[in-house]
Amino acid sequence: MTTTHGALTPYDAVLFDLDGVLTPTAEVHMRAWERMFTAFLAERGDQQPYTDSDYFDYVDGKPRYDGVRSFLASRSIELPEGTPEDSPETETVCGLGNRKNDAFAEVLRTDGVQAYPGSVRLVDELLEQGKAIAVVSSSRNARPVLEAAGLIDRFTVIVDGAVAAERSLPGKPAPDTFVAAAEDLGVAVDKAVVVEDALSGVAAGKAGDFGLVVGVDRGVGADRLTGSGAGLVVSDLGELVTDGNA
Ligand SMILES: O=P(O)(O)OC[C@H]1O[C@@H](O)[C@H](O)[C@@H](O)[C@@H]1O
Image (cartoon, rainbow, N blue to C red; front, side, top):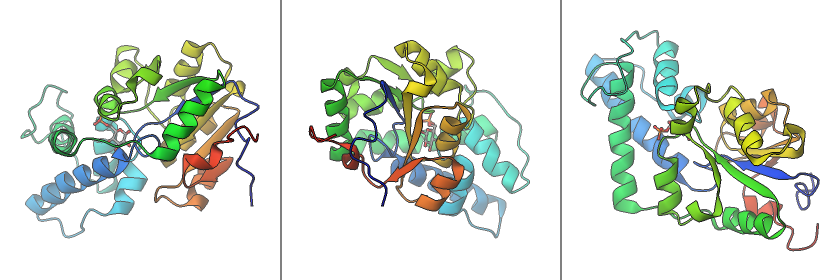
């Protein structure tokens, strides 16, 4: 078995994905996508239902409209792109993405967010050790989610979907958002660790030649995370806490 305690010790910075890594919101995104795509396919009379595999293979970890585009392409469904201003009723790539976002926002409002306790312990230990940390998320909801989870004050560098759009950075699986976060922290990529639960995010870490890519297995499967480039796979970030025993 791979030793996890102390695995982060040689590195200066840790770049955390958010949904599914710090907070259980990957599940909320997943269900919101399922609700939207299931209704969309049913309206079209499509016989092949939307499944969790569709989420993991085409949507997970990617920016909102990239996820829509990627899933529609997998079913050879062509829709106009539209614009981010499209209303959720519009039958466009952007309209469908915004339709899903309404479902996500409703859950966030009604249920709130509790961070994974093991993830909070690791973040706090890294801060105590003086390591640099950042959040790198494809989501435009990253700040509200961090706020709802009570984590926002722990992070000075947050590269989210809105920042990526402002700086014209391509989303995961491209490495650019992680590289930008390392630059913002002033740390070289080979001294930084990427922590990800999505195949697209692990692939981004691998493509960016980061010192280590940690896969967090929240359902994708350890083999697939390793196959996409994870050097280490854990099921909870508490496994990486050293408690002074590194
Ligand atoms: O639509 P948002 O909130 O900008 O999020 C985009 C993506 O953000 C990622 O973090 C999630 O893994 C995806 O499920 C989600 O689709």
